[in-house]
Length: 121
Image 1 (cartoon, helix red, strand yellow):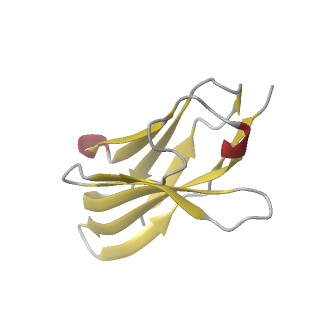
Image 2 (cartoon, rainbow, N blue to C red):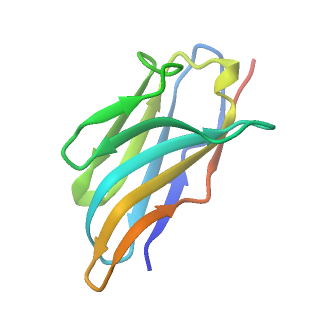
C-alpha cells in the first residue's frame, strides 16, 4: 500500500522561509506527478505547485517566484521550498502523488495527511 508522509510544517515569520518534504513509500516503481496543494481555514483546497517525473513544473500565480518545487525520484520524495512567506500562505499543505506504479498495481492518486504551515509574527 502506498503512503505519503509530509513533514516540515511549522510557524514561520513573514518574509521567512520553510521547507516541506513529502516522502512516498510502498514498493514503488515509479511516480508520474507529485503535487502540493493547500487549504486555508474556510477556503477550498488549491493547487500550489506540481512537478512531473521529467521535471516539468507548474505554480499557482500566488506563489510564483517565492516557492520552488523539486523532487528526488530515487527517494520518491518531493520538496516545497517556501521563501518570502506571507500570512496568506497559512494553510494545511497536502502532498499528492499521481499515476503511481508499484510491483503489483497502479494507483491513480494518493494523498498525504497534510502538514500545517502558519505564517505570523
